[in-house]
Image 1 (cartoon, rainbow, N blue to C red):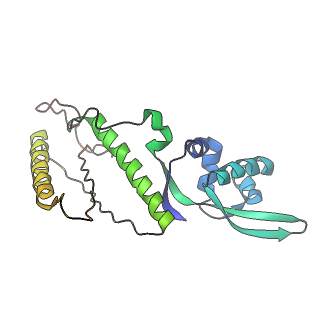
Image 2 (tube, helix red, strand yellow; image 1 turned 90 degrees about the vertical axis):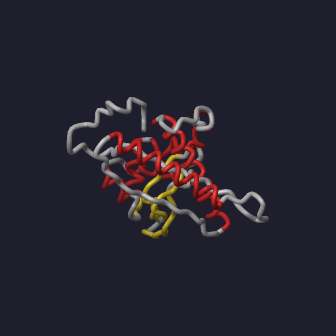
Length: 209
């Protein structure tokens, strides 16, 4: 079982978003049969079996073992991942395109970048699994508490300058066999409950800085 899996197929995304099937996916973090699940989630076994077939068809659950009980073969299933992310590829016709309105101070552009990140990394993970190769990635997650919005703006400017200099230092278009890598940095207010008075941003009215 993977820690996280990316859903790219529209039909699989639809199956995962069904409330009943989502409950079964969560319950199948540990292997279980339809009979066990029926008792656990309070549904008839036949209905559980129906939903399990749909989840298995879309690769969201997998067979762990088969147990013979008299004239009946009991199939023990397990979710293929502990959690799932739906790629924008599942909504290809309406997925956001960050190249349309690039604006580093826009929260919506940040969201478009994040969607592309999910799409790109999801596709890379899928490709790496198919070829049984290791995928080289790097990520940083940090929390910074700014005293003022002005400090935050200065931090963002300095960060942009530093990253631009690093990119210029290491970027090489001439070496044969080189491979492009995308660098995405994000700065946004924490979604955790605010412990103090909200930041009114009176000195920086621009959205999403």
